[in-house]
Image (tube, rainbow, N blue to C red; front, side, top):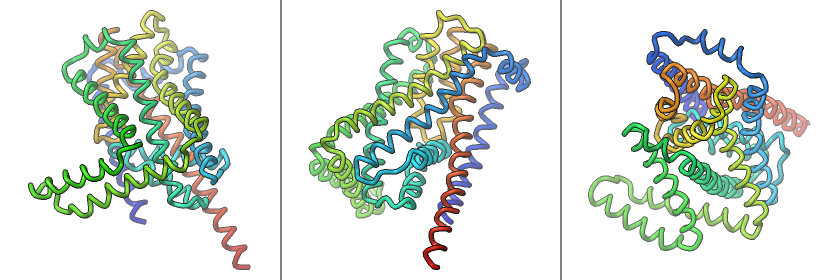
Amino acid sequence: MKQQKKQLKWALITALIMVLTVAAMLSQSKDLTLSDLTAAIASANKGFLFLIFACMVLYILSEGLALQQLLKASNHPQSLGNSVIYAASDIYCSAITPSATGGQPVCAYFMKRDGVPMGYITAVLTMYLVLHTFATLTIGASGIVLGRDLFINASVLSKILIVLGYMAVSALAILFVLLLGWQKTINKAGNKIIDWLAKKKIVKRPDYWKERLAHSLEDYGKAVKVLKGDAKVLLFTYLMNLLQRFCQTIISTLTYLALGGAGSNVRQIYASQCFSTMGSVCTPVPGGMGIADYILYDGLRTLMDKEASLQLELLSRSFSFYLMVLISLIIVIAGYLIKKTHYFTIHTEGRW
């Protein structure tokens, strides 16, 4: 019940931030309205709109396929339908909580109800997070290669956010690599840092944080042990994560082309979305809302006029984030109701 209330609270906060973000973007223009955006979609190229929809479906399906293979490798196979529900719950709850912290707990809830032991759930989700981080870094690297000129022309604030985002994801990737062989060393170093913070009265419960650090390192070790040696599954999971990130990133470019944009700007549009993702990925705001919008709009302003930039930003974010989250929510609700009925039937039959 507490978890449900917490999710509801963040859902309401996210809806408020979404409304404020869209309102703030629309306020940048005296002429652009929601009716204009609707009209733009109605007159857009239907072929590109179909590709956008396909990318939204693939975004959820690719994570489902990755989780399905990881669970199979850990000897707890699940159907594709169940795996898609896990993926949708992760995507939706990550989008409505700060720093995407709510996704994996809800995903774990569905897995546990399907009979997967908690130790294996932790191992699978940890390994998925590791490979997801490397896939994010790969897509981010493609943005650097394709959009160096775009970064140079960005505003100072955008540059700071983008650099901080790249640094945060890179540091996380390096940490995951170091953890492969330096778990004990990192645990000792972490305990010393916690003790120092406690002496400075920055941390009030050192034993609690030491225990959390030890559990995190232990969970990571389980993930590596469970899936160690299964290079094909790890490669498949990485590629599915790469596909997921690419599907989300390319939506801005497809939206631009759907609206009749010139092919000569495709490279910069793609790079703008890469920078937007990287600059907002580690910010403590649900879905990076506001921050991702600002960075994307700032990048688009170097390529087109203000009205066109606002229109493209709002439409592409609607497809790549807001609609994606809505679709995920529908899948989660449907999955919850189906599973609730299924579990009720099993328990009722069991009593008889």
